[in-house]
Amino acid sequence: MIEVRVAHLGLDRATNSPVVILQEKEGERVLPIWIGPAEASAIAMELAGVKFSRPLTHDLLKQVIVGLGADLRRVMITQVKENTYFAELHLHRNDHVVQIDARPSDSIAVALRLNAPIFTRDELLERSSYETVEPSDAPQPLDAEQLKTYLENLDPEDFGKFTP
Image (tube, rainbow, N blue to C red):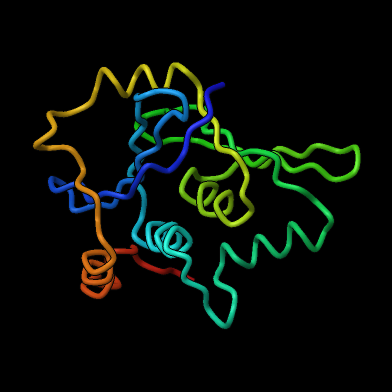
C-alpha cells in the first residue's frame, strides 16, 4: 500500500464535477477521484480550517468514532469497478479492528478530521497514470472563491431526486 495525501481539489471542466487529487507522499503519481459537490465542500472546509458552531455530517461521524472509544487508523482506497472507487475505514477499538465499506470522498473527509493516513494500492496509481489527460485538460485547482461560487450555483436537482 502506498500512502497518499490530498494534493488539491479541482473542477473537471468537461463534466463540471469536483475532483479530489490524491498524490503519493513519496512520489509524483496522482490518483484523481471524481466526487460530489457536498463531499468536495466538506473536504475543502476541513482543508481551509473552517469550523461551524454545529457539527456537519463528517464532523458528526468523527464524534461518533471518538465517542465510542475507537481510533481511525487508516483509510484505504481499495479498488475501482466500472469507474466507481471503493474505500474502507479501518477502525480500532481495544483489540478489535473493524473495516467499514465507504465512499472514498466521505472517507477522505473523515480522515482529514481525524488526522488519519490515507492509502491506496499501487495498481490504482499506475492505472491513473496511464489514463491521465493532457495538462491543459487536467482538473484545475479551485480557490476558495471559485468553490463558493460553484456551490452557490448548484441546483437541488444536481443531487438527484429524493423519493420517500
